[in-house]
Length: 500
Image (tube, rainbow, N blue to C red; front, side, top):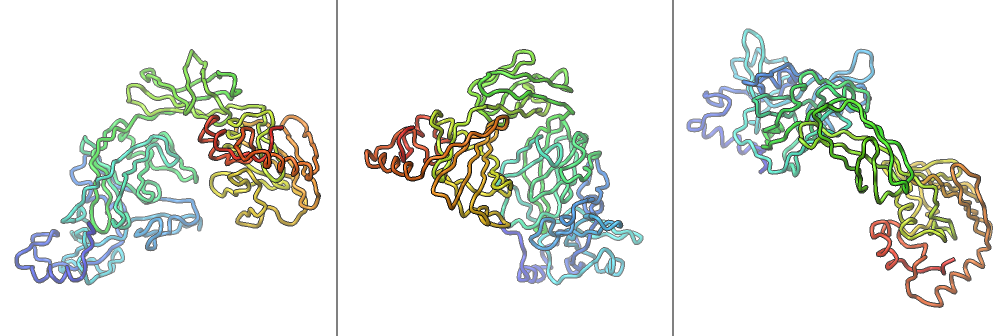
């Protein structure tokens, strides 16, 4: 339900004054003037901490980043906040929230000119009531006659870069409006106020309880008031918007975090085992081990695994009793095999490689270097140089320029996670020949050259003999092969040349 009240609704409310009391007080709404005020976080949350045994002053948010703290315009990251730049000119602070208020007409003179009070003509959907006592201004909790219950499930993770914990609520309404604040309430009656940027990020709520003290941008995290959230159970997650309260009722246990270290040695993918060590794990932690797709078991400090393939893995150690947060360490399984080759403008399966190994290599390509300029093959800012069928896209472009431009000859190096060998080859757009090379990081390149005419003839012969798909094909979609596996992949690959 959209909770916004139109001007027509406000007019209707005024007509019904004699029979309907306003939520601000028992007095008639005509005793109040409505507007907005810049409310510091401490004042904004004071009314929300009513009867909470852990009530505290909520601080402003300091940010060393160049601009996120001031992105408070409509539709922006911290919409509805107000701020100030740091005295030294670098970074700034988010001081609080610009929020609707109701002010008694008798107190209007005391509020005028304070906290950027701006009168509005309509009655807001939700607001805080302003009180004035000997010139001191205070604010109530949000007055909302129609608070909403969120139906989405709330989840918590203790694995986040933005603090020690992160809470998300699924399926949040699109029309709830910008988030002005958020509350986490626990079964022991405590309330915790969340602030923009450090705690509130587009609906996600993150905080530190003292284990992680800085976030990725180098900003210090405020954790003193969140220490006792460890080991507590969250009963409510409430978002405050200008349309009022949106609350998800839940029962989320906050697992106890601790400073620990898990170190896993890299190993060959076909070795079946590696070693690891842990530091800082509590004595009553009951470990359960897992590592993604690997089938693992532990004997002392030895991690045994089956079905190992080259790539990055994470060893996760969970507490069987559920009291503590899990801990983890990353490691890489490697191989010195090179299951791919370059031929006629495409990366194909090497003659002595299996379809599955070729597909695995292609699915883990991480970096492509062209004439000494490196491009990420996946993730943020990735440049797609290799097409789905393995061919090199000579029209590929980054945000700066085309990859293949300004030269007739290109030296290309393809690297994949877990593969010690890199595939290297030359693309010569002028020569009537194809140059291939399989290079390794710890050995010299071996270069072979074949005439394009003979290669073309072989391909044509293969196509003329039969149109039936053959194993050993080297041009099928490596993305599809990777997901289907060896048997399924062989059935869907279109043959383009005979096995060599």
